[in-house]
Image (cartoon, rainbow, N blue to C red; front, side):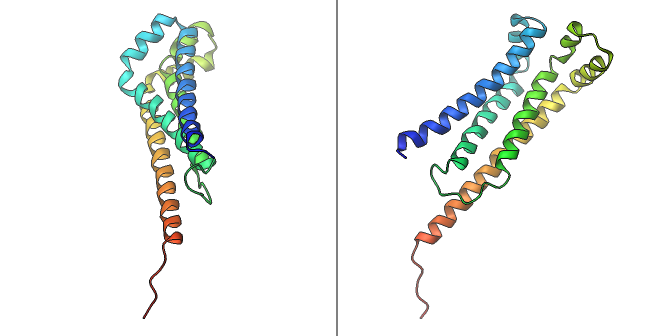
Length: 163
């Protein structure tokens, strides 16, 4: 695989992951309220929404590097796939939680109203958990990459003979 492909795959995956999460956020808030409200809400919560989106993009890029074995012949990826899914899912739920109370205006179902009120009340907590799971996923994947790199370097380095 050429160096260009090894660089483009993770960049593309990272941009796609960040773009998808951004699309979900703006799509749901725009549908529930209005596109202007989505922009206003994003600007209000940018301190937490931007790190979640960027973190998920980094996580998607690292997962691609591990899964496609782009730079190091990784023998196993441990829980990196699960962590990517959990981090992305939690981040999406957290960002939807910030606007869930508007969905109840459109869909006045009692159970949904209670759940939406709960999510809206604890939206920052959900966002922090989503960001934390994303950071945990990034750290785990970096640990896997560095461990595998060290393993490969040790295999390729000639050992000194014992006298």
